[in-house]
Image (cartoon, rainbow, N blue to C red; front, side, top):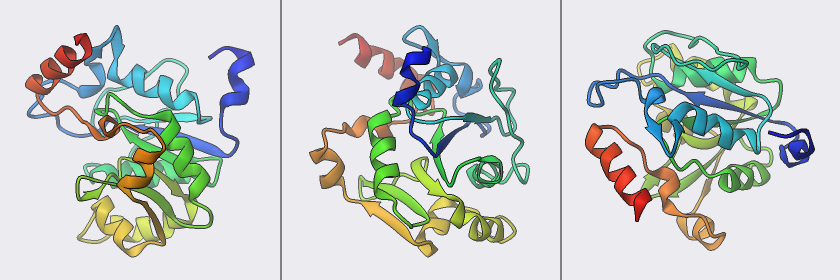
Length: 204
């Protein structure tokens, strides 16, 4: 990002790219997959850079890293995304933290900004989509940290479980669509076939 573009970065919003996961169906670390001339990790970081400062990398059990970017170890190894979220909330210099997964090729900066603008004094702002919620393209507040740490020590380490007990803002699908956001922000890639289809779609 050029120095003159720093005005575009949201004041008080950090970001983290979660790269963990075994990628058993993919066969390679998802962070290393190339799409439109760059890796999914570099693509995710570039998109968050437009609205977040700093942008952290949570490699989980992978070797994902980028020169000049801070990597943070999961708060508890092999605990799923929650381990990375807790570590990032502990590290964030700001109250708000944008959390995205590296396997989302179409991370939407405008939607991240929208969630940060709407969260107010709530613990998390998350979108409803496809009959559920999207906890890995969401904005969390540090006020959720204590509950997240409790969940990390318990039997249910799911982000959806955490959000169900939090003071959460759930943005209806009709609202984010009305703002011109495409549903592809929630599209993730899990298999080589998914990647092949992603590339085919991009060529159309």
